[in-house]
Amino acid sequence: MNLILRELTAADERTFFDGFKEWAGEDPSWYTFSWKEGMSYGEMLEILRKEALGIELAPGRVPHTMLYGFLDGKIIGRVSVRHTLNDYLRKRGGHIGYAVAPKFRGKGYASEMVRQALEFCKSLGLKSIMITCSDTNVPSWKIIERFGGKLEDRILDDEENELMRRYWIGEIPSR
Image (cartoon, rainbow, N blue to C red; front, side, top):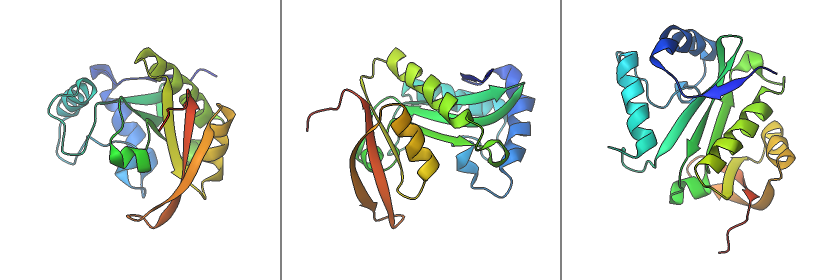
């Protein structure tokens, strides 16, 4: 599989917006947290750069790196790697949040993106990596378990009124 997970560059502008079209009808945050209508691509890249460095973070945000999955020159998904956890991310989100465009699902791309994201986490020095998913998202928790995810618990997310699974990959932190 020739899937490459990496940060966006200035040369990816057209590819980014072409990839955005694959998410029509979906919540835009499944593709991007930073780009907003009317914003230039360059402005978004600067926000992503600052977020990765932990500069000028919005309230409740932690340093994170947004990585996009490129396959044959197209963006088919994204992974947000959070460098640390806050209370919200301990409940919902964890260190790794990933999404694959609807037409590319069920083909193993999410697994490959998670594999590469775990390598990226190691490069940040993370030894314990939390990943969460909805209790009903069977494909996602199967991916997490395939990479050694140990189920810590299931908790109710009051905000979304949804049962969430919380997994740890690597060393499980002591409480």
